[in-house]
Amino acid sequence: MKLLSRILLGFSAIVFAFGAYIHTSAFDRMSASVAKSDLPAFFGNGFRVLWLQDSALQIVFAVLFALVAIRPSFATRWVIAIVALIPLTTAVLIYCVIGNFIGGHIFLAGALAAILGALLKED
Image (tube, rainbow, N blue to C red; front, side):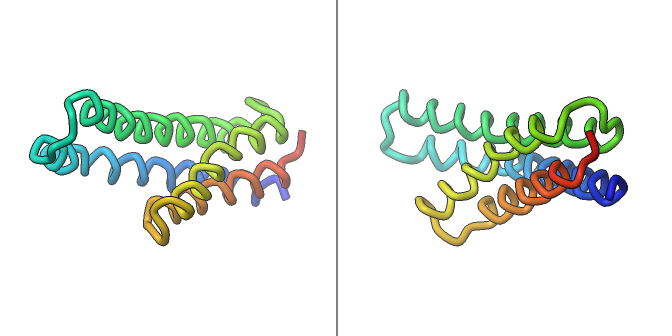
């Protein structure tokens, strides 16, 4: 089970790295759309910050899960499972607010792989 745990955590890291890449790649298009909108500057800038914050969090998840996949002693199974609840909650919120959307699928796949990998991990 140790190998399967590492594979799942590695998969989760790849999913979040890919998610961060595609999310960050869309920043310019989103920023241009905000600039064309009638949103007040405060809300437009806030939206830009939240956009980049989401990308940054995905990078943090990718690095963390990759580190645990490479060096399992880096964190306990429960720490990884609790951290993985953050993207799982994000996926639920995406589905509730936006609906069926690729971002929700990315967060759900990465979170479930990390949780399962954590539960299979040997401490």
